[in-house]
Length: 522
Image (cartoon, rainbow, N blue to C red; front, side, top):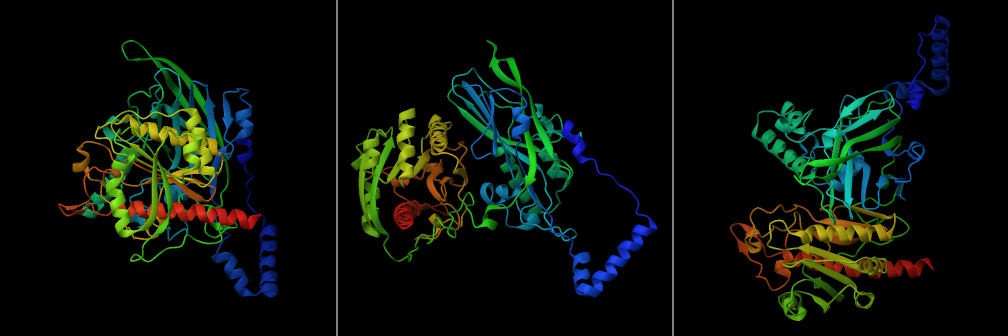
């Protein structure tokens, strides 16, 4: 690669004259600046520079292929063939620790985040080393045939000649290195070590890309590609995705392939919070855009505000009957003024609402581009989205449909959008009632025992504020008419409506504050 020549450095042994000059310079510094300054320089070397990877627009442009582009925020490389699209984005350790796995990155070497060393600092070097190089890949199938990606046909090639294989999940199924084997080698024999290993592997199985069933038309799939960390001298890399499957034959065997190439370059990285700016997963409460935090209220107080809720659901029950149990709770414990409208996501419905509640119920949800546009405008105007999937079907299509819809809304909102887990220190967990963990998911109430349920709430963050809460934990079963919250078998299912009240209060206050900020800035 042409850029490899940039890495070559000339080395030589200093002559005796050079050594004497260095010694003289040191003596001069001692007399001019004092012994303490020299000691500080020798003992405390210059601060280590952190790096991240961003798409290399020069190398991507050099492909002379209009199918390749870079996102507006300059963080994502894109291959867009119109009937399908592949996006790839580098995830820094900061992002992995603070957005993707915040709760799993707080216990040093005992942290269960499998992709970083979390908040551990190597005492010998004084900084946190990098465990892996992690990329998020998203595949959108708009109108193409069945698509698929084999992560073990994906390679990272550096400008100094390194050729890195992608890690597989389980040891027995991997052609090269696997994350299971990696952590087995580093696992002790104690019960604590066993628990940490299982927790890490649980995250790996949930998030790592693997050759699964095809991505069908209308679906989206994302997951992580994991490689070894880059050597210090690397400046440019290529992610080489070989034999990307674009078609299957009548026997359901891959029959058509293409190869994809994504180029990235290494640049110095400054964590967003060190500049007082927005950190995905947290509201910015220090910058110019947000001079006041969301006002927390006493847990014994009664949260208040107008909540005009537009309800989007396939449930045929009249909305007043559907939400009647929730109304009874809110009337008893809050001072919210609640109104409901069953909506088709028209501009008219959303103009008269400040909260959109999407419930993935029995029956198939569907959304149009016009509905995405009106909902994006709703969010720009301060609206808030709460989406919960509660279908009793083990593999509900509605969960993927909701995620696709919200992804489309994020694209319409523009570059100031991030997606991620909502960390437990976010105000929605403490603005009224305090939550140290998310409420348990009532599998008995959902009547599903083999469904994969996220152990977190997802969020969309737009211009320094949380604008959507996304869940497949079925909390809306307790928000509507489907069974009262209860305490059963040692688990507390009584707090689902408290969490919703926290979110409602946060949504109301967030919009009010947004209007105050807009008025102040004019």
